[in-house]
Length: 289
Image 1 (spheres, one colour):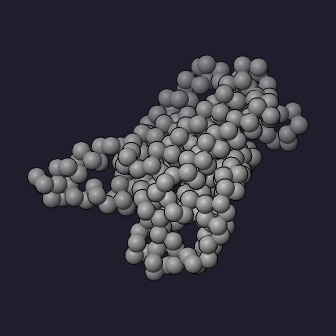
Image 2 (cartoon, rainbow, N blue to C red; image 1 turned 30 degrees about the horizontal axis):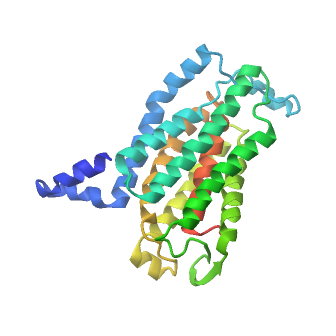
Image 3 (cartoon, rainbow, N blue to C red; image 1 turned 120 degrees about the horizontal axis):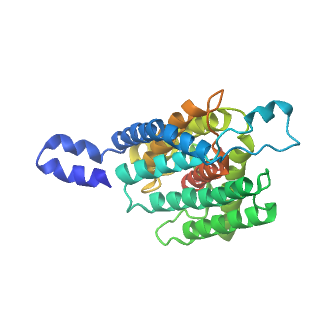
């Protein structure tokens, strides 16, 4: 929450007033997250190599993937650290959306970390059993969905929006909770399944994050929401800072994950990034995009 400290100084020096703007703080989050990735990723790569924490390849996969054996994995750790530190520095931690998306990121990242750890420990590509993995994901997504649905100040908690037609609302009632589970768990595993070719998953995540940044900023801005016929959702604009952190972390990691990859994000990265994207979808009610 460094921005609040700096913004509090605007009475002494007016230029500090710039920290009130979400776009400025989102830009700072991009730079901060990218810088953390660039500086600390090489350190993490060396440490993972020294500890022999390397990628385990499935025997059923294509032969060209066998060359990835021995590549340091669990690089998602640096992605998560970059995002969390940048969001804490430049985001409003009193904002409930920021709190919830960090829980989603860290929670799904924890599941991925456990999965990666078991793969390394067993020296094969089998981590958590599918039943256990999905059960943990569903339980965490259920908790997040219930928090969203039961929030007393959110009049659109159980509504789906047809994009750019804010009067077209689909009231789902209590069924919004299982729908949220499908979106979050589905997005999380979608990124996980995409992760396989150097730079593919993280590149797509970067593009998707920019799209989500536009959506959360527009939906949290009264003027833009009214002009573009998007439902105005109070406080969602703050998620733009989180998107900035996520985009910066993705750019920084892409430098080391592009072909030939020096590090692989692992499930700790793919599950957490996917959950972050899925969470932003349910927050902005734009799952129909």
